[in-house]
Image 1 (spheres, rainbow, N blue to C red):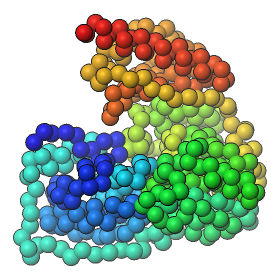
Image 2: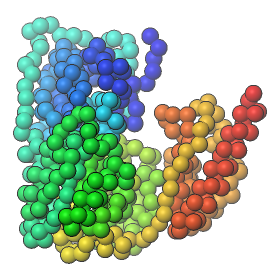
Image 3: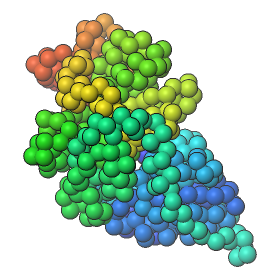
Image 4: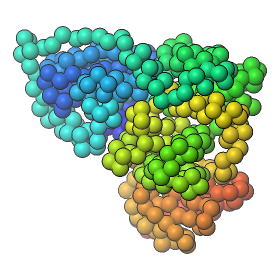
Length: 461
Ligand code: MG
């Protein structure tokens, strides 16, 4: 058998019934169950995808055949499952979701007993068992019963409410439009906001694994209907989730789309105001606004490689209580150190209510930067050499290599070049103080990178 890597940045992903077939999933379930150990209690959840049930039963079958006690929690957001694993002291959790990917995809994420996705080494251990077929099935009388637990959504909503000022949000009487994109966020966020005293209108809020109204990824293009609805209803804000609701993206009171690092910056500012001296964890691809806010409000920023699991693990390692990503992922440590869409929504409502200002106004008070993303095609086997050439070709007063190469041509501008782990491309991120300057930096560095790739290709052929 050709050995390929099963786990990517966020678990195992693939096309339902093509990559993720019942036989593959049940064997993977046996390998995952072996990793946890027989008689261990595993909470199992799934998002709203059409392929969820067949994958769930195949996975359950694999887990149970090696002796695990499986607790089926039904359709739940990923952070709800992660919360329940720790709150109810399970030994681990498995979530069936492809997060923001299109509806034909599905995936499997594995969390440890701390609710955080397991490390790369643990994933490798599962892959080793899978490829060696070295799981140990138990005898018939050691197979445990499968049980269900339909109470974790209540538990999860209650936990979130403990971290915000429910009275103050209720008094503010906010009008909110929620767009869960036909995903599992439909099961939590509209109810949570109603309990917080908001006037809630929903769109795309019935679960439908076909994704009939928009793609699961919340982007300016996919949130057109939400922007229009917020404006038409004169709402205070709009909230959108990705397919498994671990991320939240916001539309302001003027109907404007807000990137995740801006709303994260707002949460960071108010968090630091009440917790000065705290460390904020964020990947190198985040806006320098995050560092600037930390400087202004007596905080410190810890930059990491890109990836939600990396942020979670670093938070736990250094005892940090807040993390965030530019895609709308916010990690609120006092609740749990994983990204959590409903918690993020509640935190933002708390700020709006306490400040008594419109969301657009609060966001306008933050430092303003412009950013742009692009990519350059490059064969995988040339990526290391291209990286080396790029470093020696650029002149920068400062550069670092936490993840890819990040260079600062001046104090307020940066360019990040990262080789993709899954595709034969380099991703380019650029940020600066004006739109024009950002565009110029992108053009110049993209050209430089393309020329290096061309030159090395010629040398190799
Ligand atoms: Mg997600």
